[in-house]
Image (cartoon, rainbow, N blue to C red; front, side, top):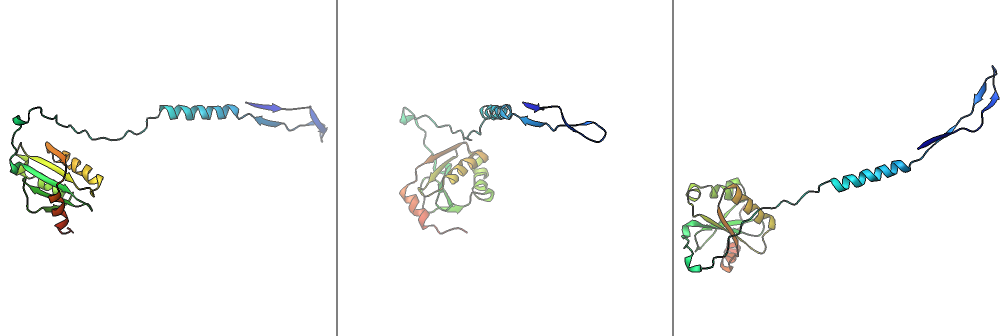
Length: 175
């Protein structure tokens, strides 16, 4: 707290005979203010909620017990998206391929292709996302976001084959 100390009564006499008041010094104790500051700091540190990491929910299918009951996939129902190095994206439709086509991650690229009515109206349409070892993590996350934006129901992240890697390296750079 604070205290005012005044010792003695007055000083000498001035004109008019009134005694001069002695100047008193003030002393402020800062200990309670420091205690309060640390209590507030501790309170806000303990009650603040830190930002939680954002996650994307992915529902993985269960592995079938009987593989003979699995349905066959028509090759026209499958689109393969190849996430390549240097922010490159390639695709082809079907299970067998000779060449791949290059596209972009934007609205005029893969999103426009996936929004095509021949894919949107097909309930068995499936997208296989395949990433090269040199591809960037953000591009794979972008592909999952695009699947969500285009409302593609069936998609999976699968391993890329050596033949697909060769095809990507032979395809010229897009501008």
